Length: 261
Ligand code: SF4
Image (cartoon, rainbow, N blue to C red; front, side, top):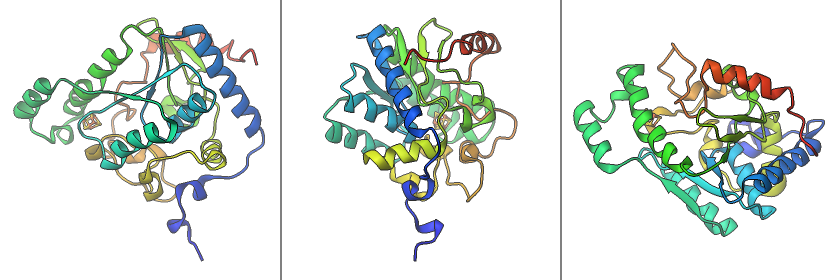
């Protein structure tokens, strides 16, 4: 007999919740509308996490003209790198990989060491700026819109995530799963046989770079496995947590959050 610890993530987290089909239909509509408004300058910036796999599946399944792109920080788990290749084979679509400049990474490591992220939050954020923010800026250059898998229920820092907002560069940022629960994500994955990172089966609910991600205990906060040694911040790398000013404009945008379904 299976115990919770031996169940796959899709078995552990899937449960039927009222309104699931409605939320799925609304997410598809939002993505379809986003693609129609921004083709060919819209991209899904995927972390290759469970939520982003749902979005990639919708993009592929419905033939939406949205580019799929990810950041290869140079510190990803083997399983994550393999998932990008699995996506390409499974959906027959290309996944763009964006990496930090090799020379800059070499210089950073020579100066600060390979594990300087553990020394201070400042050092950790410097590493995130180099390995994530810099390539993200290039990934987004020339695009008018991007799509993420952010959900409000993921953390307190994400509790106000709108379906749609402008980022600080003026691009439209779509978060079509903003109102989804974790159960919604896994029900969709189970229903549609969506490939996912096997680290989720090993109790990694949120997967980032290998040095900075660990498994969590049953019942522990899903974000507890990210930068677990830090206790003084929002546990974000800067890709998604907006400035105070942007939060205000997002609150404003949320008033019109119902999609034209
Ligand atoms: S998550 Fe860790 S390894 Fe990845 S960029 Fe940030 S500090 Fe560096």
